[in-house]
Image 1 (cartoon, rainbow, N blue to C red):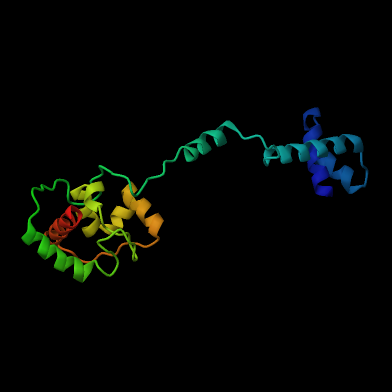
Image 2: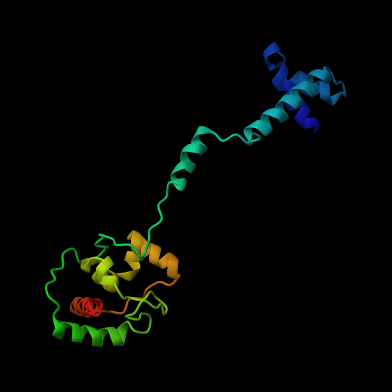
Length: 193
């Protein structure tokens, strides 16, 4: 405490030409000059410290600016139609009338690699049910989700929302590009029934 008082006194009389040696000698001999002046200076330091540490509840303009975008964050509806093509190597997938041979191959791949976590109905197992998926997602998005699930859940807004909703990371099943296209055709056939 004595050190604080000495520092404050030094700071308060520094402008009057006093030097540090005189202050130290004054305190060493036990002479306390201007005790009221020191008390006022100490009080001002405490008030300044409290104010500098955020003693005010009023937000600063910087706080208001950083908090505003959080209030404007949008929530992605996972059941709504999205035009996103997702993140991955599929940027353009051409589809025509349902190819039943391709769909049959897709059903076999789906059964061996996907059915443990997904049903072709609207019912959830581990992941969401896939009924109507081809009506609300682009073909590219579906194939990117099948072949690139981890990156999709990090970068694609719909995939992120699905991850937050189901709390399970879709696993990479080592599905080839051809198999992904077959699964897409199987899901298209499923949604047409």
